[in-house]
Length: 171
Image (cartoon, rainbow, N blue to C red; front, side, top):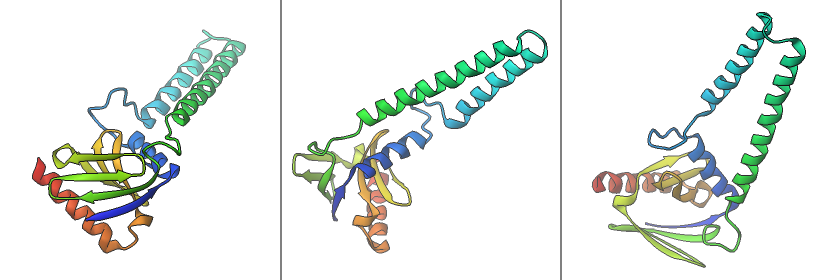
């Protein structure tokens, strides 16, 4: 099966968002959104309890809460900056037109600046969102297939079936 895709920055961002949202028990430093929010709520509750017990004064509590807000904002800004630096450039090997050839032994990717071959035993899974099919080859790497480049549902299902058969056969 041959699939021609035109990868745009939004497609790579969709993969990044998918990877960050996907729970992966083997991932290092995987601390999901709900535990993060729970941690912040616990900190605020502890501060309020300390205020009620008279351990903290109201001005001290306001300084502590202000510090939490400032720390959170700085962390968020650094995270966004690091994330934007990790995005691919227009003249690299990720964005632009790619031809994926799904053969019996491997997936071949040809683009203007690069060619690669990934054997089926290296494919971890096929993941899907509303707008993309991701043929995952690592925790944070995939062949990205925007559904706009595979507009018919039958073509999308053919790709799903082909990858699922090969991944199951390679296991």
